[in-house]
Amino acid sequence: MSTRPRRAPPAPTSSPVAFGERLRALRLSADLTQAALAERSGLDVSYVSQMERGLRDPSLSSIEALASGLGLSLSEFFDDAEDNATTHLARSLAAELSPLDALTRRDAVDIVRRIRGAVERATPRRRP
Image 1 (cartoon, helix red, strand yellow):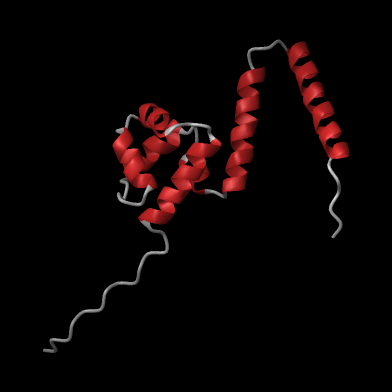
Image 2: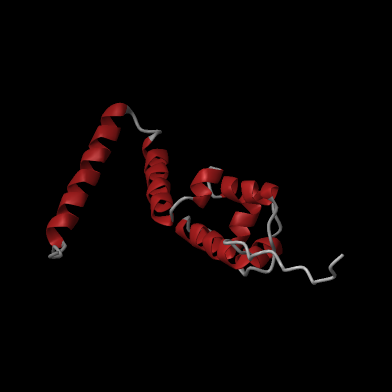
């Protein structure tokens, strides 16, 4: 039998540091403090801090709790950050509009469209 030393397995493509960076970006895009996210997730604030700094490797149940605290599904938690920002914005707008009656909602949507048009007109277009 050979007594050669075993090779270490390849490093995973995701690391606690990468996870922490992603968690921090999602938390900030949701405009939450670590304490607020910890409270919403049912986790200790020091644990959230350690995960963001890449010092802790979270369990699946912790990731599920964090996603829930951010108002995201697990798939949204791991999807592209820009898509998540758009989803978060859409959910925020929907939450603000939902208590309004249908006519008022239509007026609010019309106001958002007018604002978007004004911003587009005021923003210089980039040439390809």
